[in-house]
Amino acid sequence: MEQLGKYSFGIGDRFSHQAKAQLSALMKAKEKGVNLTPVWNKSYREHTTIKSQPVSTRIQADQAVKELNWQASYFVDADHIGLKTVDFFLETSDFFTLDVADFIGEQALPADIDAFVRDNKKFIGTLLLPGMNQMFEVTEELIAKIAGKYLFAVKEAAKIYQHISKKKVGQNPVIEISMDETDEAQSPIELFFILSAIAAEKIPVQTIAPKFSGRFNKGVDYVGDLNLFRNEFEQDIAVIKLAVEKFGLPSNLKLSVHSGSDKFSIYPIIREAIQKYNVGLHIKTAGTTWLEEVIGLAEAGGEGLGIAKKIYEKSMGRFEELTAPYATVLDIDKNQLPAIEEVANWSSERFLAALRHDQSNPAYDLNFRQLIHVGYKIAAEMGSIYVHALEKYEEVIAKNVTFNIFERHIKPLFL
Image 1 (cartoon, helix red, strand yellow):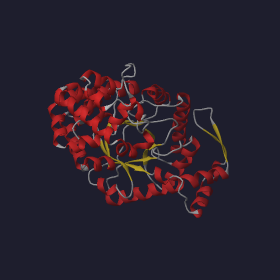
Image 2: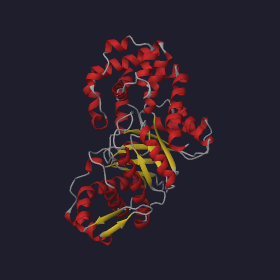
Image 3: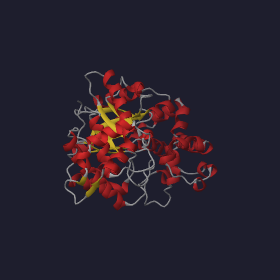
Image 4: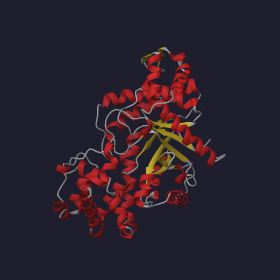
């Protein structure tokens, strides 16, 4: 089985131009003594929107690794795939994020639920989480309830994994299971029995992405109760340790935080917890690189700033179309967005102040930032105009991409 490092970092590169800049940030971390495994991730939805193929992500990753002489492992993730989309990624990916959130709540067969309850009866009573003064009372009814909610989803993950295994014989890619894009957070005790089901299906999962309480909106800070997040995160760490021991799951199994980009207020909590309990972490930063591309274009001025403004103008005109697919991870007050005419007259500095994620700047606009975040479809439709701009302003864009990942993400999380 391919082994994912203790700390791994998911980096999205929607237009396949920033792999070197992204990897440069991880190399800076390595120089400081922190080893991070890069995982380039791009979803089927993003490929479809941009009209790209997974091979483009693989080529960029391989090229960056070669040119920067990266000597450690790295991966290319088939992000948020299901049975209908997995084949698209089989040839070029060695990491698969099995997204089964849509199957949560689907009713498993009564016989399967009964069998699951029988297999887990030994946990009825008081379940103590290792290293914590936290106990859960487990009843037969609770196990059956959790199975009723999650067992079908786990069995769907098993179908996807089995399909991958048959197609990639002997390759044993990294498997992640994602349940984050759903309405309700999974409680620690639910996560424990989800992991029991995963083990029973013999899925060698190395990372799991549960949904935590609070809002993990795209490209902006966490919104929610920080103490509640701290408790959930630490309890989930303890649950994973216990599940590895009880169910024989891979010893390097770790939490994955999705939509992890720019969640600055929870980074100190995550850092403290992974150090306190000496555990790994996988964090996905996804679209934050796309935003840094737009920031780089705006900073360059001239044609670059014009393209950035055009992206906003077109995004406003197609607001519903662009935001609908991301409704669960956006909170945009449309009435608070600046008028197209106003933005058209902005200087480079004013545009940057609104878009760059600097919460100390009174001009920072989280509504503006979130809309630009989902506006990458507009850039894709610009075709060669946008690609040419990425190449023309590569230096200023790369500077922003590397700075953002290293200074705003890696340092507060790991250094």
